[in-house]
Length: 119
Image (tube, rainbow, N blue to C red):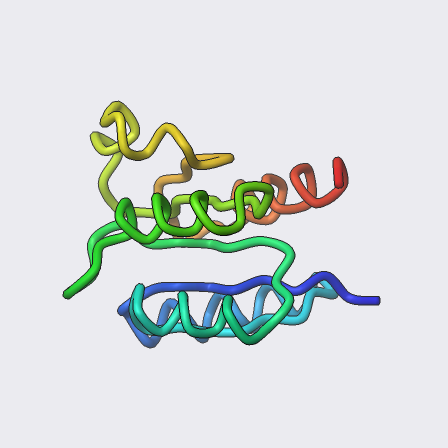
């Protein structure tokens, strides 16, 4: 059975790029444009891993991460952001990995494969 990944990012183009690239790797991919939408999808669907942006309107990724880890403590979350300085903020430490966005998705794909391979 395919592993299910939820990609949460407010940038539509990035969501669809991640979806296409991760589906090519053999994953089933769900998309959410906001933290609120992500939490709703997590309530309804069985997800194996979350790729989460930090800077989003409304609920930011650090708040979403906190809520996810409270309710689904074993669900791996990868923070994927354009801002490298958030890595040193306390709120991001609960993530399973921290990746700075790049046009080369190799690091993201390798991190996903590593995390899901351990489960």
